[in-house]
Image (cartoon, rainbow, N blue to C red; front, side):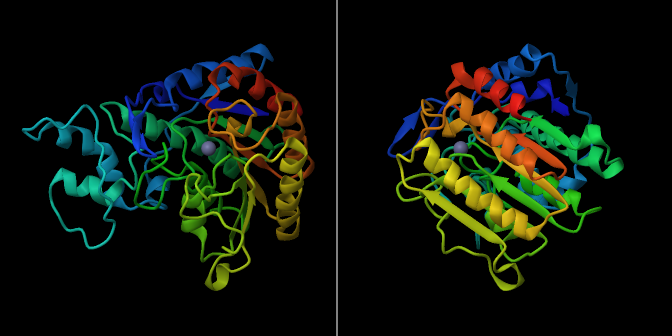
Length: 340
Ligand SMILES: [Zn+2]
């Protein structure tokens, strides 16, 4: 097993975000990374420092204009001679027909909601989060050895809500989509298994009309729950991608046994698809005491989840994404790693 991370992921430090009627305290904080890194250390596992694979694999998924925005938005925002606050943030979302040239217009085009603010160092962390994920993918492309069969990437900021050209839900670059696309350089079929508390609507959108990447997600019902605009069972893909998108929305309050019933259904679709390689979006926000949880997975449950993924017996890349019960991230991640 190999584990990757990069310290530059610490730099992104959101100050506030807007959601459900008010400004809220950030949950996706640098402290998450500190806690997550304690887990491999406690188990005597080495964490490899990710190296730079470059921007090209990112641009194979995301629009150049959007990536340019993520990189330069903060300095353009601060150059405006008005009180613009400390972070790039907008309450306007106008993705189409938006030809405005100012930074406020760009923010309206590229920030889908109020929960993905951009500060001075955000881009550095966003970039290295994607690079951390890409290291595992490149490693598999280079050599598929027993040691490379299971790889875990500790990534922050998180990625699965990021659209092709918009940030949202604490997400900026869609790491799962970026590495799935990158893995297609060698493999024919990639399955993305998402078990984060929230539906990864960004991944779904990006691959919705494609059959080379299966997306299957177990998540809290999107009725009155983020991302609200997608994640229902009837969303099955379109065109030649029809039948390659599987959503398993859980009723809010689902217990651990219920969660695993949905996980088993999700994994059954993966077995039918018979992928060459699997990308798992791991969210610790399904943990029973997580502030985002709408189900009740225990610490021991993460070990069971890992065992189920391992039993699929395919090359596996795990992306650690959500999880906001900071004091339990270490325990929960140790449990998951033990299962692998
Ligand atoms: Zn989540």
